[in-house]
Structures are given as structure tokens and as C-alpha cells.
Length: 475
Ligand code: NAD
Image (cartoon, rainbow, N blue to C red; front, top):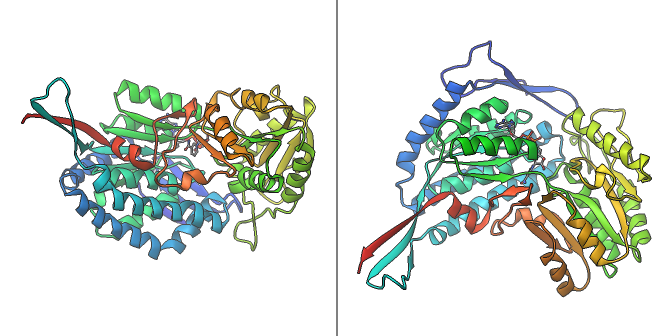
């Protein structure tokens, strides 16, 4: 690829820091982009604000119709997008296609189809002031900032951008410094659609660029990233009174009840634990298996895991790609060492591979809550399993966490599954499946506890992209 792009703004000086993109599977330098200075970041926001002034007053039907041009362009250029995501993130092309581009296109379609209904003014009855009429209107906020991570470098920022744009806002995205080229491709495609270029701004850079975006006068921020970063970002938003959505880390428990379909559960664990090499905020991060099915489930999970082919995602039939950077490998190794020192057994995997930034998909048995692997986010291809003797114990352990993003329950008794779901502290609970809730455009997604607050996707998220305005009048 070998790209050198300039940050948007007044032109970057050569003394500025560079954001470098490396292919995790090969170590190849894919491109470099100048990090935006504070002034440049603010200039991008200012241009976005001017573009929004014209965009925000268009009838919503017209905005939706125009945004469908973006959908057409994304579909036309899907190969290019998949290529850059797969290279820059080290994930198999099939995952880039189905979990990033397809989900974005579906979100765009859903919002363009439904936004006129969702954002239509609503009359509300007033029981005290009967002689007055009141209506709630949804007005654009202005400029929405989006700060995003590297693990889904396309669907996360683009999904948020689509909702903000449909609602009449401009967006300014600060992509992860690890995966800047994916958004550079999205920006190139946006600019080719004839939609106002400044309506979709990008600020490249590190944490400082994100901080500059928060302090630039934006009207809302959607932040996705780690819990510790989220705390700093929320504090900065507080200092600037910027309303924000926080999409932070996860430690998704999977409860395998005594009556679960063992084969289905095992397949779900292996998919949910190792897709994107486990670098997913809603990965299966810990399993609580009822003692009556534990051994059978463990042996099936082991066999299925051993079948996974690990390697460069450009190779044929690769199931598990690269780990994004060496530090993530070290984190996985530390968790495994800690678990083994406290009595866990490595059932399969457990090691980094000598041929690059890859880690063997790992299954650990005999795990318990004294181990970091059951308590802290791993964000790598490691699935720890703990045997439990009752559903009560499983629920208690599932809730013994500072995080609460996704949770999974496997049982043949759907009513019981729903009863368990109601008792788990999580923003999203999936029964007899894994991960796919993120791909449901209509379904609100987000966390509780330190997994964050606010929601993306669905009707609530679209309304949250707006200022709620009440108009009270005499009848
Ligand atoms: P990270 O927190 O290191 O970085 C996220 C973004 O924040 C990056 O763009 C980074 O440059 C920016 N940033 C860093 N410091 C900042 C500051 N002081 N001010 C403003 N911006 C700043 O996260 P990461 O390593 O890129 O992503 C992995 C984490 O993201 C995991 O914890 C994962 O669970 C979480 N995640 C959550 C969701 C979700 O929907 N809840 C989705 C994907 C990833």
C-alpha cells in the first residue's frame, strides 16, 4: 500500500507525529498519516459545522435519499474496503465482509428507511394544561465526534456516523491510531459520492487528537474503547459539558445450563471466543458449565478449537487471523500464566506462534474467580471454563464482574433462558446464540456497570443523536 496521507487541516508540517499502520500478519508498513495538531482538529470541526448548517435544514426524507448514495458506493467498492480492513486489522476477509461492511450497509439501510418515522414530531397530551397542545421535535445537535478503536475499524465509526448523519448532524471521526487507513478509505469513498465533503470529517492521531476533538466545541461524542481510556474521555466530556455515549470493555459470560444442546453450545463458544482472534468487546470471555455436561462440553470445545486454522488472513481457509500488536499477546500470556499458577489446565493452545503475531486459540479448564482470566478483559483468543453445580452459582459468578456488556445463556428451555437473562447484569443478553445482537440494526446496544452508558443502534440511538425540543402552543 505505502500511503502517506496528510491530516485534514492547514497542511501538516514534517515535524508532526506520524500515525503508522502496520499489517499485524506480516509486519509490513502499510502507510503513514500525519497526526492532526490541535488547531487542525479544530479546523476540521469548524468546516463540519459549516457543512451541517445546510445539511441539518434539509427535510429528513431528502437526507436519507442522499445518504443512499453512500450505501451504493460502499457496495460498489466493497472489495477495496474488505482488503484494507483485512490487511490493517489482520482479520480474515470473510469476517471483514460479514461483520463490518455488511453490518454498516444494513444500518444505513435501516436508518434511511425508518428515520422519517422515528424522528417525526410527536404530539403529547398534557393532563394539567388541557388548553395547550404540546409536541416533541427532534432537531439535529450539530457536530458529532466519534472516537473509535482498532478491533472493528470500519463498522464501529461508520455505524455511529450513519446514525448521526441521518439525524442531520455532521460527523468528525478520530479513528484508532492503529488502524487509520480503513477510515481513510471510507473518507475517500465518501468524497466520491458528491455528498458535502466537510460533512464527514476525519482527524487522525493519538489520544491528543481525541482530546482536541472533545475540546473543539462538538455537540456530542460517541466513544468506543477501553475502560481506563473511557474514564479519561468521560472526564474531559464532563469538563466541556459534551454529552457522550461510552461503549467500553466487556467480559461476556456464557452460561451453559444442564439442559443445553452441547454441540450447539460448543460451536457457539468456539465461534464467540475466537472470531477476530478473540479481540471483540462481546467475545465469549468466560464459560460457566453445569457439572452434568461440563466434561462433554469441554471435550467438544477442545476438538473444535483444534480444527481452527491460524495464520495470515490472506491465506486460504484461515479461521483465526493475527493479533493486532505484541502487547495483546503479552496480556494473553500473563492471564494464562496466572491461571496455570492457580490450578488451571491448558486443554489446548496456550502459546504464541513462532511465525509472526499469532496466538494459538486456547482453552483453559479448572478456572475460578481467583484468576485474572475470569475477572479482567482478555481481548485475545483465550476461553476459560469453570465448572458450576447450579444455575444459581452460574448467575452469581456471571454478575461477579465490574463489566456488563454482553452475556450468553444456553438452555433448551426458552422460558428458563429468559428468566436467567433477566437476572444478569448486562446491557445485552443472547439466548442460544453469540455475538449476533450487534448486527441487529433495530436493537439497542450498550453496556452497564463499567462497560459504559448510552446506547448505539436502534430507535433510541437515533433520537439520542438529536436535541429533544418541546413546542407548547395554545389550541
Ligand atoms: P483505547 O481505549 O486504547 O483507544 C480507543 C480510542 O481512544 C483510540 O482512538 C485512541 O486514540 C483514543 N484515545 C486514547 N486516549 C484518549 C484520550 N485521552 N482522549 C481521547 N481519545 C483517546 O481502546 P482500543 O485498544 O483501541 O480498543 C480496545 C478496547 O475497546 C477494548 O477494551 C474493547 O472491549 C473496547 N471496545 C468496546 C466496544 C463496545 O462497543 N463496547 C467495541 C469495540 C471495542
